[in-house]
Structure formats: structure tokens, C-alpha cells
Length: 397
Image 1 (cartoon, rainbow, N blue to C red):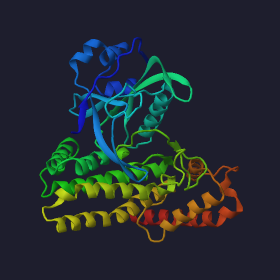
Image 2: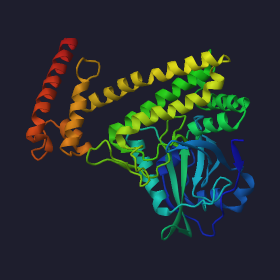
Image 3: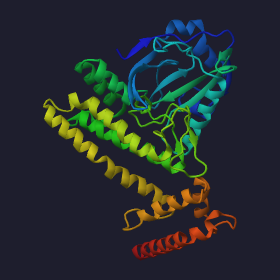
Image 4: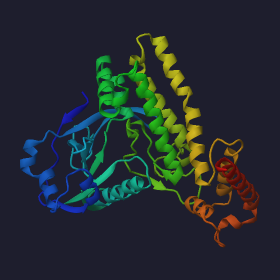
């Protein structure tokens, strides 16, 4: 019930447009001739030998539950490297599937290049993410508002299992389907919890921590995902599906990057609340198998959700304090972060450049940090840095 076999579309003259050579080498699939990949992905011979498939899943899109599936994505299979790491190899934009719902299953070259760029940027910013192995030019038109060049992204992930996959199992399958999905997910992604007393509960905590870590890192670099639906929330914690997303310039927690997000549901500042909401949907899906006693199952789920805010606060402020050169855990320092963000918002300061300027040994003369309204915070921050340095010297002494 979780997939349907489907073949990628065949194109008359597909062309390798961009190949990620370092990633290709890391996957142990490097080649001197990039056209070898074209043969692998799109030849009639390869079609005979692979059992490619599209995944079925559900999800809450802008808060509303919907039955979904890969409408323009096809997984060629699971690739295992020489070091025994397993990855999905997926083609995005390679044709229709039974989940396309009237769409053409295609993608524009422009949008696939954009996803390549952003996913690789996220990787090199040390954020757990899908990777982009290649962009292929189909040399066939794609019809949107205008006629555009067609493109296909070759996407690599540890797994494409998502919160929406569990919602699909819980709402549209049987209890045995949910158990099978849970067992498979643990075996695939979290083998270390397989022998624990209650692996389903352990999986819940793994996902909570992985997703919090991912979104904390989004906040670190000013990243706005744009479409944080539950079908875009991976169980592995990988950021993926780079559609209407962006890196913020002027700091504004209300900033959105989706033309249909009129209410700001997926704004930059709302991302922590949304990932908590998404995890709550994951918890609901797991309820039937957390414990045979429904009352105890609810207690276990509630206990896990009650820990979210504590975990978030610890990881978020720990990261933000590190950004301004301070160690977390010292009383009264979190307010420095809150006050700084308020100043950045009121003074319309650039998110990345502000932290960059603060990291310099001498703050640049033209920096907005020298504005009069910023001075009181700057003095408090310098005092906190000095105290932190003194404490470090005392410990080392």
C-alpha cells in the first residue's frame, strides 16, 4: 500500500546539464563519462532491469489532511555504498505517476537547478539535508505560465519516509501496516533502538530530537522552508523538497516565502511552532502501537510532547548564544538573544551580516551595529563576553 511501481519517462535526447562529482565519488558511483548516468537512468535497457516506484503517503497541507503521493518523483532504488551506507536515488520531474492528480509529472530546468543550489548550500552549512547528484536537461518543453525548458533532479536521501507516511498508515491502513512501517523505519534509520523495551516510543524521541535539531539549524542560517507540511517532514530529520524557500535578508520573524501562505503559517518565526505541530501529528499516528493499553499510550505520547519545549529551548538558545560568542547554561544570557532579535527587527538589520559583524575582532565602521539604539545592548554583550572570558581563564587556571 505504500508504493506503486512506475517507470521514469523516456526522453529522446536527455543531456547531463550538471553533475555533482564530489557526491558521485562519495556514493562510489563516479565515472569519467557523465553520459553513463544518462544511460543508467533513461535507456530502454535500464527500464527492463529496475523496479522503480513512487511512494504513497498523506499529509497535512496548510493544516488540512490530504491523501497524497509522489506526483512527479520516482525512486530508482536504494543504493548501498562500499561503506554500507544506504541511500534512496530519486528522479524528480521524470514523468507522471498514479499520484499525479492531473499534473504532468515534469519539472522545469530552472526549478531543478535552484533545488540543486539550495540543497548543496544547506549541506555545506552543516545542515542535514537531501543532496543533489545531478540535473538533467530533457530537451523537451514544460508548459507552465510560459513554455520552459524541462529538467530532472537526481536527489539523494537516507530515506524519503516522512511524517505523512505514518499518517497514511494510521488513517488509511490497518494496525499491521503501521507496525510494519514502524519496524521498517527503525531497521532502516535507527537500528540502535531496535532492541529497546519500546522501540516505537524510542522512535518518537529520535524524531523529536532530529527535527528540532534541523529547524534550530534553519534558524541559525535564516532559512525559511516555506512549505512545512507534514509530508515534507522527514523521519530521518533531513531537510528536503526545496520549493518556495529562501535565506532571509532583513530580519523579520513574519517573513514568508510562499505566495499561497497568506496567513503566515510557515513564516520564519513560526517554524518552531509548526515543527511541534507536525510532530504532534506523528505522535497521533503512532498512538495505536505505543502501548496495548490506549490510556497508557496516550500518557506516553503526552510525556514525549511535554518535553518538546524544554528540548527546543536548550538547543535553540545554545545555538544562538554560540553565534554571539557565549556559552549556554549561564543565568540571564538567553535574554541577550531575545533583545538582539528585537533590535534587529526594529532597526531592519540584515540577519546574516549582523552576526558576521559581531564576530569580527573590530566591528566595521559602517555596520548598523553602531547606531545609537544598538549601543545599550552592545555594552551588555561586551560585558557578558568579558565575564565569560574571565570564567574561562579561572577554570583553565
